Image (cartoon, rainbow, N blue to C red; front, top):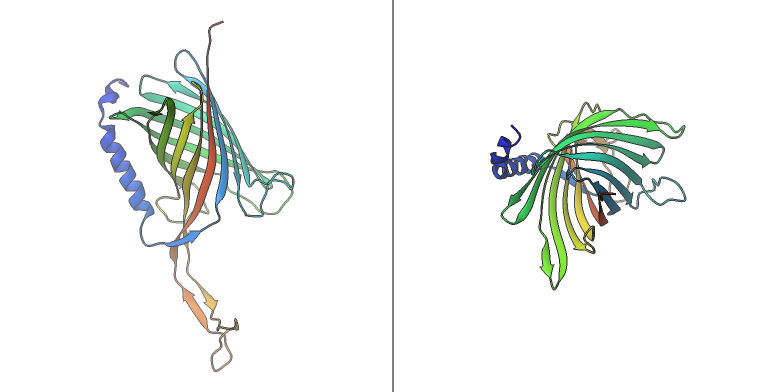
Length: 276
């Protein structure tokens, strides 16, 4: 049955998926631009003779927010992930992973299962991935605050191609990913909760190693209920009416898209199984 699925028109499905996610994210929204975040990204894989592989990932994140993991480590977040990708045939993959995320006062566990289709669009690599992950929260200190466990669905489309320029191999890539939260009591009514649009530029240093840089637009989609706030004059004083009561301004309910620019370094290292 899996072999018969190879003939499904995935190019059209990819276009529908992309247009749906973009149209869901767009609309009349207030944009909130956050400071640039700086990421380090390292992937390592151990490929088996069957083309299946074990993989690991390290991801670090730093920004100007005063919310570091520790005073000695100027990072907002650190991710460690391990997983296994099963190559079902030439185009279909099934996989699972476990990821530990370290934040200030918190440990987060991401348990994920996914399937991926690897195809071609002419000479361009075209990959599609859909998955589900459950996110569990664990306090790492006695600080105040609580967090609810929740799940999220995700979809990813990526394209890429190797170019030979004067004997050196360079690989540009473009990817678009969306997330839909599930059983999240704090999430508001937005069809898409998070999107990541990313561009990579990689250099093939060896047969097993790619090194490069990437830029990404990370967007959180929130819904904020309406409220009221005092009206201030040019000097910062609260404006009052004739009875001395503060004048209030109605703030309507609205969609807010919080956009974080991301600049990062990327490393991909593939280890091959060798017969003893």
